[in-house]
Length: 207
Image (tube, rainbow, N blue to C red; front, top):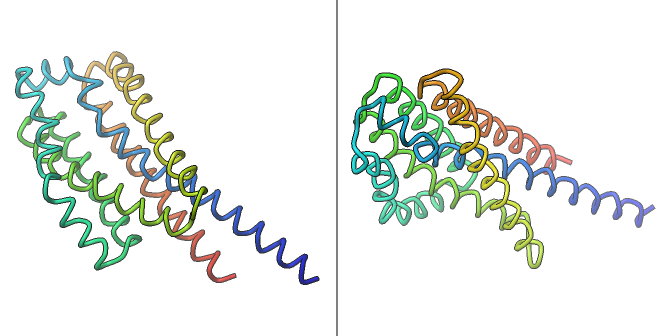
């Protein structure tokens, strides 16, 4: 009976780890989908928002520049409040930031889009840091490399889907508003995946 219980416990751990891994990858899905939204809609954004190529590239510069120092501060912040609370904060901020960008596109406000990209950059990079902390807590040794590979792969699929679907949505609707708000909904779903993962973790530790 003891061996049977031990086998069941091992199976529960494996199942929980698999669920955590899938949900963790899906958490970053919205983040990566949103990051390259401008790239997939470059000519459309330049035309609708009336900006030059140099101004368009500011969308990436404003995303990257704050992270030269703020990821260090973010790491300290994550250590202080914990990775799970940090994920909730940063995943929510990713969603809010992408919403700001979408409204910037809707109202043809380049400055509003830049404002959103700044906060998206801050939230995005720190979300990845928080996520890595969770993965290292659940996976050890050789499992950690495999888990990290899975975490990287699925979000990259999100980036590829963005490149495919965003221009398609634009061609169908004739406006950048719809592909930008599609990214918002993808971010919302990613946030929901975190909530589901949190519930699963609570259930596991209560067993």
